[in-house]
Length: 414
Ligand code: HAM
Image (cartoon, rainbow, N blue to C red; front, side):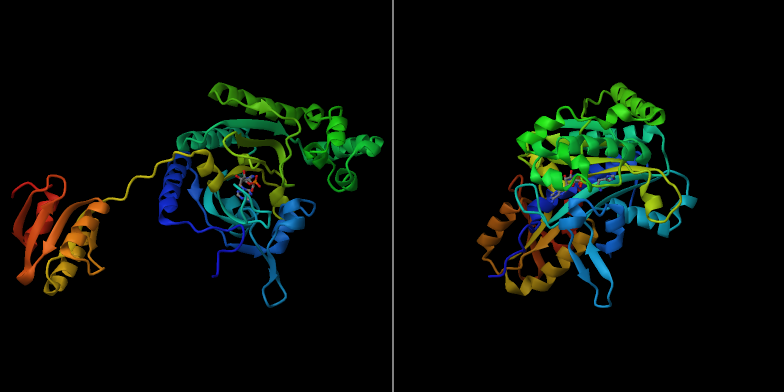
């Protein structure tokens, strides 16, 4: 039997209903702050991610689904959506619009990671990006919006970790300092960390290796090296979060898996998840648009995994499906009347279903009960209809043209 590819899953109707709740909350919370929805293509030029996300990242080195389009161009299924949005911002001249341009998305991403609970090869992200503002209020607003979303969905056990990565200049000076520090302790580091000192020394903070962790206790921290502007920006973001009552932990070693970040970075984790505890994260990416050949343009945003939010909000209830009218058949000759009645009911704005399985009348009533139909219209010979109120059990015969008006009046006599 052919099965769904490893690391992918089907979204069955029950979970589609839960996802609709997520989408409604996103629309409400982000819409209220002036964010508007955007959708970009599922695949993009590979170079967009190589440049945007960064050659040295795990995502680009190991996790991309890259293929040739048959014409010698390399395409990649998007592993994330920030770089595509910056591409779209440039391509559509959005710098001419009032800034910042505030966008949200809810789309699937693809990463060839080892599948486990909360980690998939195709997963869904909801995200928000504000491009064109360097105000610390933008960072704080986005963090608050993500906190609000997680709260509205009932995501359990969340913690917010916050840090600042400064500007590229501070960062590269710091990288040199960190490299010197790592080289001075080379013998105590894990093989993996040692082999990446040149390419990605920051990853040393991420290591699980005991020797490496011991060394990193005394490592210099970027947060202590921020220049005056960055330190001030970060102080303002923190003050705004404090005022908003959003609790966070400063985590000077917070490493995000993407290279485009500058200044503020953050991540929400949830204790309700296992090892894949990151529910949503983001940060500022003031250099990304320039990296994609655009003019210097600040940006900040986040993305959160839909599956992880749902896993950590285990009792998220979706509204039950509701059926106003079930059209049953007492005699096969009534089928055209029944078909018409169901169609007319839907046109009148009712949720109406038609018997489609050739059940006995008893079976049809049982089925109507199972799907919680409010009314059942039993169509008999020569167009006579018996309308049954499934709440009270009352039933009465009615001409077919009276069925819909009666239901719309809630059953009251005309
Ligand atoms: P990210 O941290 O790589 O950031 O991904 C965001 C969220 O996507 C994660 O917190 C997690 O919930 C979910 N996620 C990531 N990988 C997987 C996976 N394999 N399976 C299930 N869920 C996953 C970004 O993608 C950035 N673009 C966020 C951003 C937006 N930064 C600025 N703007």
